[in-house]
Length: 284
Image (cartoon, rainbow, N blue to C red; front, side, top):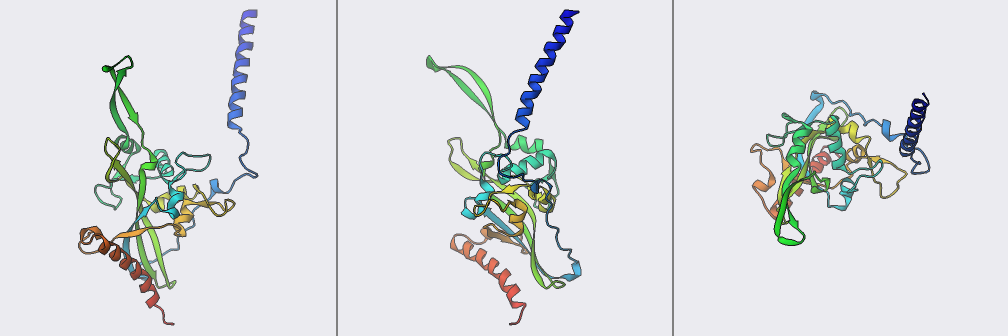
């Protein structure tokens, strides 16, 4: 009887010590001077309803955000996730894994027709290689081969495609824009580490992803007390980009009919047309 009693007492002590250690991990000290309670429950700003009869003019534009630009650095950093702070691709991949965002196959088109599961994405972008294990005493002798799995690295994404719709709402008398889709573009490298191209990963439907982006914090380099989210960055258009395609009868990109300086001038022409159209609607 005493043996059983001693066993239960010892088990209770062990469980108590373990629970105390877990409590210490979970109840970590507050990293700051106040509790940040607004972001976890934050909702995206709702769009203004638009009727088909009120759209007097519209044009579809495709852009590319280069995350190497200084203005776009908040999308690329931090390379390693911090407490409550992740880079854009980590936020997207975590949301796809949880099922909060649906990814669509980019090989068909950008119309969000063929959904992809996280398992399909993980299988496609995870590298699996066989590495020889060399005998340390004899460099010419291979002891065995091991399979090495290298997970997807978010820092490989340095470009993001945007699909957006510009339109003039005559009911409100404003030129407005809505982002429809986002496509991360992954860098491709040879075995020697040299860069050789790009690969579209998947498209996500932006309105579906807005609740996730509204709760993902972005670093504010001017004032960290003013907390910003990825949804607000897109809403306020606080990013740099350039046009690589406008809707046309041939469904072709600028690179299909122009190159070099001509392509840059064509992209600038398309961007200027948007602002000039709105300017010419009014008489001063």
